Amino acid sequence: MLLHELDFIFYDLVYHSFLQQFTDGQLPVLEDKFIQNSVHNWTPGAPTRFFHGRDDSIVAFNPVAQAVRDMQNRGAADVALVECNAAGLPITHDNCFLSAIIFATGFFRQFASDL
Image (cartoon, rainbow, N blue to C red; front, side, top):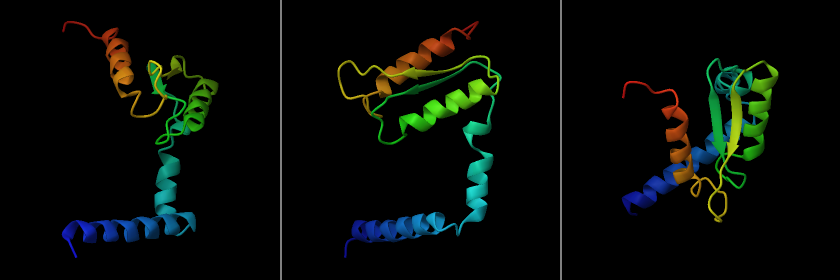
């Protein structure tokens, strides 16, 4: 057996075991930490943008949109969801990378001084 095959088998076993334990509620400490660190309970005090694509299969769009609404409902003054435009490509995580970098550069530039 090759080493990379062993790594794959180990990862596959650990990953599935972890997911099963989490799904079955056997990891309450981890679940509590997820709840404590949820952005749905956070109210940013500084301008905040979430840049996202609707077809992202890595980070689902609807929970991000809900988190933004939750923040706005709690009084966050300057929070917004900016949707990716992937220049005609599917609006996926990978295809939005370059657009996200360009957006972030412009967004943070407005706050920069003396550079």
